[in-house]
Amino acid sequence: MPDSRLTIDLNALAANHATLRGMAGGAAVAPVVKADGYGLGAAAVARRLHAEGARTFYVARISEGEALRTALGKLPAEILVLDGAVADAVARLKAAALTPVLNSPEQVELWRVQGEGGAAALHVDTGMNRLGLTLEQAELAARGGLRLSWVMSHLACADEPANPMNARQLGAFRQARALFRDVRASLANSAGVFLGPDYAFEMVRPGISLYGGGPQGRPDPRLQVVATLEAPILQVRDVSPGETVGYGATFTAAEPLRVGILSAGYADGVLRAGSSRSFAALGGRRAPVIGRVSMDLIAVDVTGMDARPGDLAQMFGPDAPIDEVAAASDTLAYELLVRLAPRLQRRYIGA
Ligand SMILES: *Cc1c(COP(=O)(O)O)cnc(C)c1O
Image (cartoon, rainbow, N blue to C red; front, side):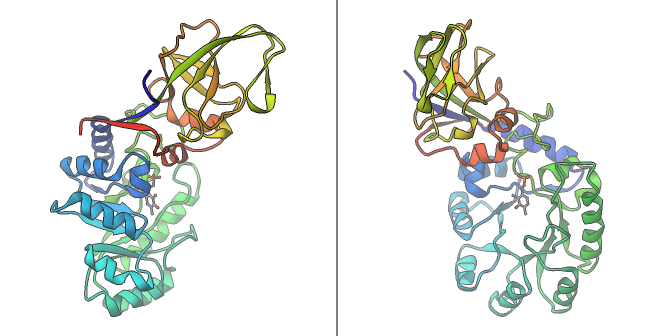
């Protein structure tokens, strides 16, 4: 009986990287590998994408940047830290040669004083109101003689191409980048790449679509499946009408059922929100989850299917698109990936 396992196809990752590069015109593709490469292993992901030509990487935390610098060793790479330069971390940024994304006038000032002329990126807010300087603050910073490698902003609604917010942010970003004439610019995340070349500037920053997630929360035929989560069937049992399945007895069989018990649960990262709503795939067919997802086990309806103990069911993968499984669990592919648990066996194809 195999353990439940996660397969990460680095060849598919490389193919998605090439696809995004093609869509971004001449812009560089800077992979976002925060949250351990969206749960798939930042070291393996970044090494493979470095071999594919990527030279700039984004992480969220300084600790992620330090780990990535170690993983890349002597390979030349610029590592940008989205959290930026926080007061007690300047020495750590410098020690690991990390480039902070300066998010506020205070961070700009701190880096001016303590950064010793090291490169930084500047984050300008164009409407999301999360991180970044306002246009007025950016104007002040532009006069201060800061050495910048990038000016960037982040789109709030790129997954909704018709949302007027996109054009508004694009307009504001053009104003912001005009303040920094010789500095290269970056605006687009994955969904931003799919908005077209106007949004690409000199660098795009895809995360989810490198890992196979569609730019609009739906499967996109241009992207290949990178992550496959499989769980073996431990047991197949007959359930009679009127009987219930699982904790809380929340599911009652209305007719005679064959039920497959899968060796996966929320301790593996399968979200409990998928209880009685999500599905697994068996031999290309969909087996609905019935009853509650528990810590180690999930029950699926395999009535009429060829299902035996030891057979592997896909919790997501080629037959169970991650965007659809996420939607059936009331979340996004992002969350399914970053919640993948340490207990899962991991194997890489194409390392
Ligand atoms: C996470 C993040 C990205 C990547 O977003 P995806 O939607 O996964 O492509 C890009 N830019 C910033 C600032 C981010 O925080």
